[in-house]
Length: 264
Length: 236
Image (cartoon, rainbow over all chains, first blue to last red):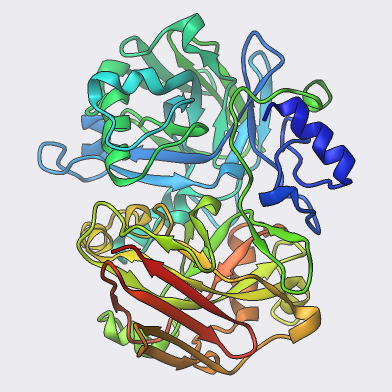
């Protein structure tokens, strides 16, 4: 069913079901196109060079995927492999290139950290995807930030408790628009850096990843079936650190426009 | 950006959004986020090797598309040899908010259902040992079977009543909602300080003692007095 048909069906059924978050597109239906008592928005990410948007199904994030970052977090990257966690889709905060988006300092943290990351968005899914075919599943790439309530994350980890309040809270996933593979190709090397108030803080290259994007897709697909709409925050290099209200973050990956936010 | 994308076309098809039936209505309840409370029944905390003293509640999440409809037959999950059942009361949020007071918390509840917090226990255990996140153990595909929801307007707010799980006709978990360490209003209030709750959010409120492994071919039946009955089969 095309999206045009779905919109028509919504109109004739009189059912206002889901509306998009940042994109405000009214699309998506509940099972059987049933009416719902209220709307839950679909999270979408703009696609560069088009009027189209990428709807998000799940947000996967990888941890300790750059050796120096693993060490600064207290792990031994030679003995402890990277691992995956998730953020809810509504954590996405779309940031347009050329703007400095206001990003709210969240509640209940005194140690709010930035983590600049390459994000890969999938248009094809599967189980047990072989590494050599993995990149065929990627629709496009974006610059992203895995914002982290570091004190809450560490406290939970120390108590052997889940990390969500440290990683998966409101607005914890700022992201630039998606650039299609057809236009920009795949990203396996090149600089990735982050500045706070104009000072370089994180500065590495994408080939410092322990598991490449292809490997992450392959490994994730062993434990979860991947679907179109899944996106993967592919890890951050060393020198993560705190920001406070008023700070400006500028994030860069070679080949993509910068992502800028101001903490408010 | 909002107006420009009002009629934007989706570049991929996500299919229907996760939702749950509503008892007595042809409407469905759209699922936003799923929060789960950990170790909220004292006897379950003890069986997991912890002291159930009233430490603050803690939360993990499942993605909305982990929901499985009542009556389904599902495959034994990949990546585990120890998939566990955890029967739970599910709270559905109808009115969002942040910093919600305990006194007003139930006003935010739309209704209730019965759910299973299915768990890859071995995967969760490894993560706990290393202080790592729980998602691969808790937030995997088909990890949240749930019944249809009943509106609080119809059934009120159950604070006590039997909650149980049978496998192949035999009781495995038996408890009472009154055994929750943190009640529903306390969970809502606490959670709403950490995140802003939205309509469509679900809270899985914890499980009593008796969690254990499921096997291929098992028939799980879960029940909460006045709320519902859940029936799920694992394919042989």
